[in-house]
Length: 273
Image 1: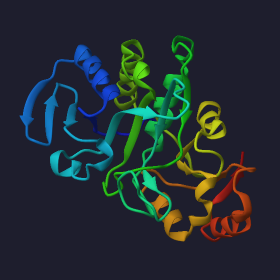
Image 2: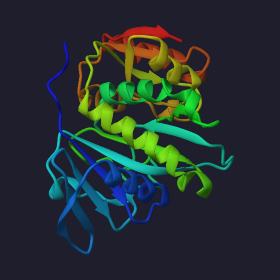
Image 3: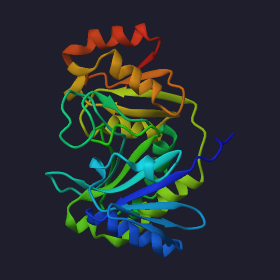
C-alpha cells in the first residue's frame, strides 16, 4: 500500500549552474508563476508544486521553513569532485564530526526520507542505458543545512561545468525526481548505514537490489566520532521507523567493537554487506 502523498518543495540556487540548468527543464515541463520575490529568494508556483530559487548557496541557507511549509525539501544541486567524473549523486545532510566547513552544525544529522532516496535512485538506475557514461552513486552524509525539521535530500549532477550545463541529463534528473515525489512508494525495511568510502558502491547497490532503504550512511572516515547521540539522531530524525543497522563489513575499522556494542544496546538488527 502506498504512503499518503507528502508535499515536496524543490529548492534551487542562482549560484549553482547545475541548479539553473535543472530549473530551465522544470519550467519546460510545467508552467510556473512567480508569486514572491525578495533579496534572498524567488518563489514560483505551478498547479502541482512550489519552487524556491535562492540567491545564495543552498548549503548555507538555514531559513527555508520560514519561507515555505513542506513535508520534504528537495535540493537540486551541482556535484563537485576532484576527479571531475560524470556522476549523478544523492545524499542526506549532516556533519558527523565536530567540524562543519560546508554549512550546518558539527555533530548534527538532518532529517531524512529513505523512501524518496530509494525511489529516486531506483528510477534513475532504470534509465542507466540513457545516461551517456554517467555513474549513479550515493554519497555519505555531509554538509548543511542541518537545522531544518523536515527531511531534506540533495539530488546532484556532477562533477564539472560540462555536466552542469548538460541539458539532456538535467531533463532526465528533473523528470525522475518529479516522478519520484509524485509517485511515492512503500518501504518497510529501513536501516542506518555505517562504514565504507564516501562514494559507496555497496550502499548504492543495496538500494538497487534489495528491499532495504537507508537513512543515509556515515563513511568510515567519521567512525571515531560515531556515538549514541549521532545514532539517536539518525533514528529519531528519520521519516520512517528504523529497525536495522547496515554495516560495510570491511569499512568500519578499529571502532568496530565499540560500534557493534552501541547498536546492540539500541536493539537494532545488524546486517553486514
